[in-house]
Length: 328
Image 1 (cartoon, helix red, strand yellow):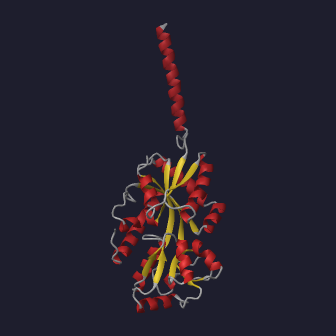
Image 2 (cartoon, helix red, strand yellow):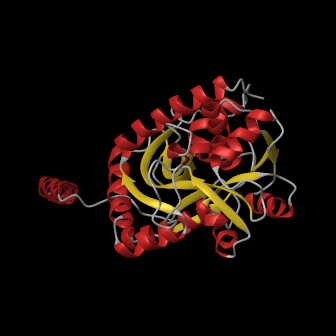
Image 3 (tube, rainbow, N blue to C red):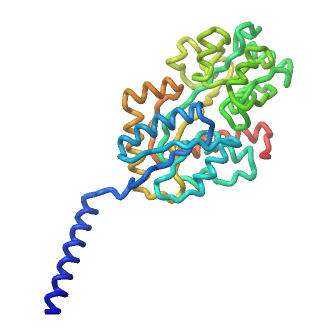
């Protein structure tokens, strides 16, 4: 009787094991099985926040699990980025990374608390963000060459507003100075909106602002656009020439919006996320919404994104070092 009982248990176990193996071989995903956190290391209302909420909505629908956006702003994106660097690499915590958080912060801040390469796994590059060089409507400057000439005649005499070290506004200004051989004075604000207010009020001379943020002032003709920081003209600013063609050869400054996971996140999870994000970014509806946010859709997956990130670190590291900027 005992032998029959043992054989019965063995048979049941074998059936269970066979079913489990068949389930695994069929590719039944163990992930995602719970809510995913998408950390935005910046305040609500900006481009990073807008991209995150759009991507979270789409990912939730495609993955069958909620993707919740959490804003963790502070110190050039460091607070939220540190949080994700220390998170469990299980695929349930992501961060919206930018050129600031994942390329240039190490050149400005010594005690960063994370390594943008070693502590993260690139998942996907959502898109690129270009800036426009704008001056107030009644500014004496009507061309980029006039700005260059004035800057050469008055070292540190012209001012440009930024949202802080390592932001796209700051990097645009640094690249401008590097290529033109001029010196501008940076005026730091808590956010881009205040710099635009001061620009219109005549407190500063220029801003290299994201196209989306500058759009209301451009449309209301309160500012003039002298050029764009992209290598090619932008469809949403017809007739505006890239700075590279206006006396600043080789000028190209585009911020970017990407998604990273903590280092060590399982490759199948990263691959799945990359495929889903590429499909989302390439859908006509999402492309249109990204363009409204001032983001040119991209969709590169993990390895191409990793290569791009390394190239950005090399490029901007040289610009920053050539400018003599030391990390604080």
